[in-house]
Length: 191
Image 1 (tube, rainbow, N blue to C red):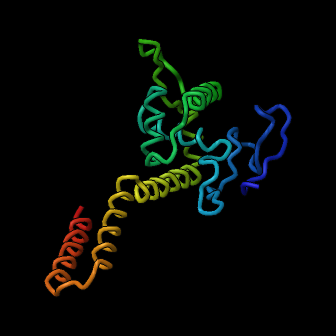
Image 2: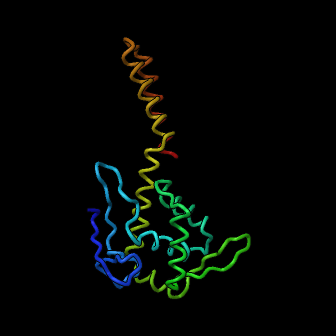
Image 3: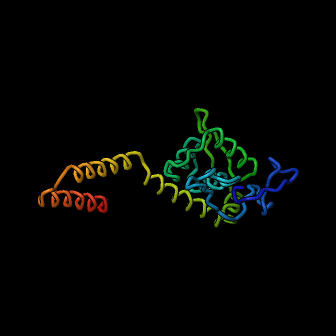
């Protein structure tokens, strides 16, 4: 249904794995966008978030809250994992021996990647790269549909439509409107 087929594997957490069952995350080796009618389905498939979190920890040892924000930033706000998703993922990574958790005070744990985690991440570099590419694409789409930009764009369209349908424009008004639009386009390109 979602482009990936899971097979029952007795003795595995959740009983699911994938075509590459040797991977504890059940990653199938392809990124696959899941879109229906232009909308994205689940942001991550089974096991994808674990690879993303492991890569983020490899880049910088982090606390759970920092990882939530890092995933949200990488996805441009298009996806924010909940604590109820992040902390079990961190626990699994720790149980697999891919990260260690050290008490950082104040009830926080600092997660650091292990040598085994680095080896696993390296052996899955292509899927990890695909996931971060997909998040960057989602971030770009999210920016394009931000409420502020959509509102401003609609304001310009409405003002232009009202002006053009209100009656005959003078050559000076036509030149002034064209200049404002050209100036706005140049300013946007320069950002």
